[in-house]
Amino acid sequence: MEPITEQEKQDFREFLSTIYGAQANSWNINLKVLELFGELLQSSESCSRYMDMVPRPFVAGNVIKWASKQARGAIIRHLKNGGKHYLICLRAAGARMKPQIYLASQGL
Image 1 (cartoon, rainbow, N blue to C red):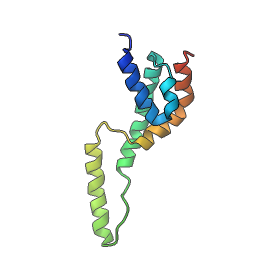
Image 2: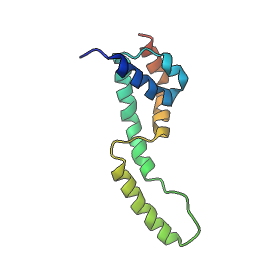
Image 3: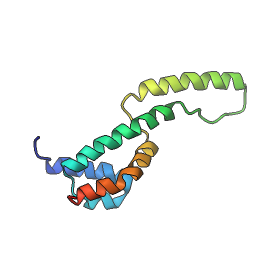
Image 4: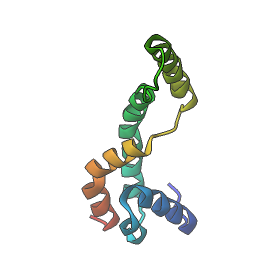
């Protein structure tokens, strides 16, 4: 596998800082961190799929029309979001994996 460039390391640090805050800016990005990052994305994927199905808030009006619109909207969101992840899902998966990622960044 090719070595990680400094630009790639910085890009991953920036992404990890959206999940873990500024502390991630000092982490050493190595192959183990990238491997764990892949696991984090996989574990947040199912959460993001389910988030597409969460109905949006009800606004006064006809409940039947609202429910029908929510069902169509959920299908459209799911199709449009293909490979996207909800930030809340990434943060939840990130919270579970933080000790592993931190230790990997320390070379442990």
